[in-house]
Amino acid sequence: MSPAQGARNGPSVTGRVLGILSAFGPGAEALTLSGIARAAGLPLSTAHRLVGELASWGALERGEDGRYRIGLRLWEVGALAPRSLGLRERAMPYLEDLYEATRQNVQLGVRDGHEVVYVERLAHPEAVRVFSRVGGRMPLHATGVGQVLLAYAPAAVQEEVLAAPMTALTPRTITDPYELRRTLAAVRREGVAVCDGMVDLLSLSVAAPVRGEDERVVASLSVVVPSAGAEPRAIVPAVRAAARGISRALGAPSARRRPAGVVSPLPAGASPTGG
Amino acid sequence: MSPAQGARNGPSVTGRVLGILSAFGPGAEALTLSGIARAAGLPLSTAHRLVGELASWGALERGEDGRYRIGLRLWEVGALAPRSLGLRERAMPYLEDLYEATRQNVQLGVRDGHEVVYVERLAHPEAVRVFSRVGGRMPLHATGVGQVLLAYAPAAVQEEVLAAPMTALTPRTITDPYELRRTLAAVRREGVAVCDGMVDLLSLSVAAPVRGEDERVVASLSVVVPSAGAEPRAIVPAVRAAARGISRALGAPSARRRPAGVVSPLPAGASPTGG
DNA sequence: AATCGAGCTTCCGGCCACCGGAAGGAGCCA
DNA sequence: TGGCTCCTTCCGGTGGCCGGAAGCTCGATT
Image (cartoon, rainbow over all chains, first blue to last red; front, top):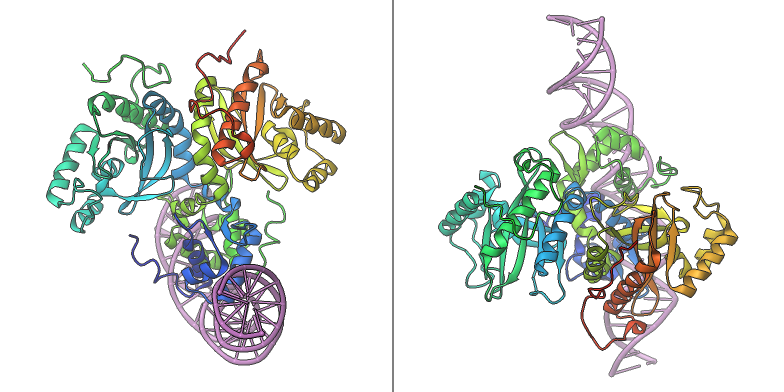
């Protein structure tokens, strides 16, 4: 997890304010004032003052139950993050198609440090339950999206991840540095990652890299399907095609092929396997 | 732009920090340090210090061009806003279906003060160009989603909006209080709003209310189609059904009907296209 | 090459805005 | 009634914030 977190937040006012925001998180969407003060390590009166100011601006909202939640205004500002909105906006149509074709789970993630942050997710209510959520984080080594992002990350990042101990989410999660290194090489070679039962034993994910205009991998998308009886071969081409479509939409030179045909990257019979 | 911006933000540190965040907005996703200082009305050195702190926490990110953008971390926190994520999560499947059926634009918005804030939007690349964007705001009186939200808003809000001057986005935008009042009554009676050419002359939107567990209208969704040759009658049922589906997912008692049938509110036959 | 300008970074003394203990109020439960 | 938790307000002391000033890095212009 993000080290130097709780301890930091220096004694500066800005740090305290950010500490208050840090108090919120998945599983802590609504907090009482004292809860915030506790989590942020602030005296109650201090928290009271700062929270009041945040609330009057709209960064926090106070519910009828007296508890505070993240406010719409903060969400608005957050929506301006280029790695969220800009990416999302262009990726959506392709995610749509992929979702429509599979009726399962489609995810889009970017790397932040040693973790993947899920920026978008389309989930069919009846699809396999997936652990991730929009705005959530997962370790890079254990997920399809993560492995792709790691495979194309700067060497320094890869070495850091390989050097650190890796937590196992299931018995099948890769935790051995050597094996991971081999896996990453395979991902680079194939252009896809297939993770079977690494997050939970019942699901399998297929992920592919999305490139930006400078050819760097800026995101990764994946489809998660039930492990049982899944046939990755059937999914891989679709995932690859969608990833390439998004890359093209982002202006990646390498993705410029096909003389601007149909929008849908999933024509019924077509296989991108070249030749 | 943004009037009364520099003036507000009190002289408190928190206010200054929030002022810095306010400097960003649609059309201002990337700013230089001095740009931020200018927009927030802060001395350069002060801005430098605060921005540095924000960036080191992850609220801002500095690009290779030296300009600052909203950081992923802030987006993450913003994603915790209940009116964004909680709503979105449950609404998505229905929006999906609606999008799939129409292949046009589907929008989901909530009310904030006298404006609608678009929380989600699915847009087909080839669909009518729509003015709105995720995280964007529009006046309540001029849009389908807005009219629905206004129709079910507290009386006080309605009167405030009716009393204030209304800007016309096109010649067809409602700006007359009396006419708006009549329109709102119709919306309440019908349970849908149909706005033809009010945002731009080429598009038409059909919107319906989404209710929460206490029956209050918490959001509104709409479909935007080309004005030319559109047949609202064909769309209305689909929009109503989707809105009801989301309401049910949110726990609205009134939406509990149908003995838990299929998930999709759009049985295969309903074709909104037509002649 | 020299000059200019725009933007960024660092430094530091003075002052004032922030801090947080303390006191008091509002609910809730036993 | 007493005890609990949570919230709100107040106010004097002080330590963190402020921001002018000096210097730096670019790139454009003469």
